[in-house]
Amino acid sequence: MSAHSSEELEAVQAVVDRVTSWQDGATEGTVEEELRRGLGEVGVSLDDGEVTTLASAIEDEHGAIDAAEVLGS
Image (cartoon, rainbow, N blue to C red; front, side):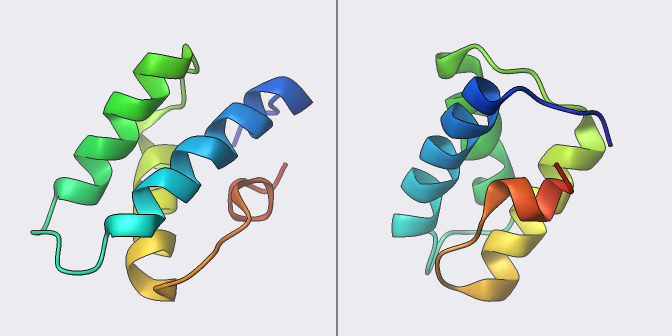
């Protein structure tokens, strides 16, 4: 996984927190779609693997996750 600046990670965390707050009951694929949409809104580009990893963590944890930890940054 690629390294991200602290500003990028902060923006990613904000998106992750937003998606996590409503992900319970979301249909399959919705979490990943919303992550992609949110990342676009904040102007941060992650590769497909990173987005998939974050989406899986959100779906698996059902709670707060640390984006930097999940991304290995």
